[in-house]
Length: 475
Image (cartoon, rainbow, N blue to C red; front, top):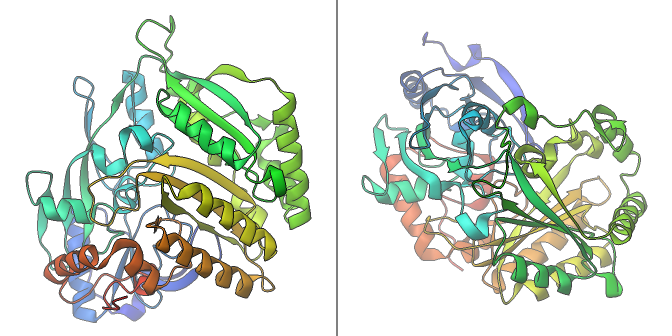
């Protein structure tokens, strides 16, 4: 790295994936762990704060650092080792989920946990401890990390595992980049017996039926997920369409077909070129327009019989990737995602209240996704033994104040019922919600590790500042 002063570094406007959050930062693109450590040293000398950024797929401000330095690790994208005999991969932080499955699928292996898109980086998945449609069964991404290397802002290179530095291992995974930078991750993958899943579609008439679906099918399925119409009310509150999916067992598929190219998504959706779908959806991007679309989708689901079919892993898991640039349908002002996690017994009432309140305030979610979760042992885990409800809210100059006020009320409701939030998607929660959701004991432990690994508080993001990670605000 050539010495320079901050004014000579390139500057860029970074945004969250929802377009609504943005910040101007200087940035650099390290290509090795040594170079990344040098940038930390440089930032300390120049008095710059640092944020880590991968593919930039967090919807809010988790990878933004206004006025500071952003380190983009996508150039560190090598698969260092892949062993089909054990299913273990050694990866640099910029490897994406897509890079990973294209490397391993030909040998019959699939990432054990994937989010709704294949484009996030492995380090980003670790920093946010991402979950998938199978969280109820296999836990989050961190449950499948065997070992990691972390470069701290102080220049240490630490090996983390459940045996070595276990307290840092369980805090850095899910610690949204506030303890250091992952520079290597060793992950165990899932052995498959087919390139396809057996998928079952379920018509769901109400929120009560949504929970009944999960309680029944999570006992036997490998994946469960449900779309929720967040605009319908009354007896139809929470109606939608659910899917359960099952791995094919050894011998069930006579032609397993592990060729990566056979997993590619189709070029059209219902005969419409994929590239045009976002523009069509944008034409319906209003409360009335989305009501029409949701009604059409739900009516089609009610007409079609319950069905079982086979579907590739990519097509089932990466629904967000079907429509290129789908987020453009929310332009010009963008959208925010909000995903509360609520314990099992409280979730039906809390989620019903969320739907009723957002509808009554005129700020309904345009998309709702329900998933079932299990608790895990990571320090700042977002998961609880219960359910999550991922919600997409368009942002306009007219609705912003109402939307934020409404979601703060919702956050109070979530916290009062023992719930938490998903930092990878958040753009609204306040320091008091952070304190209430994770509790003083967990936050104090995290702060102690942060003081040890980053005593100068070099690492900073807009999200961490908004959460009040370094502020003691007891509630």
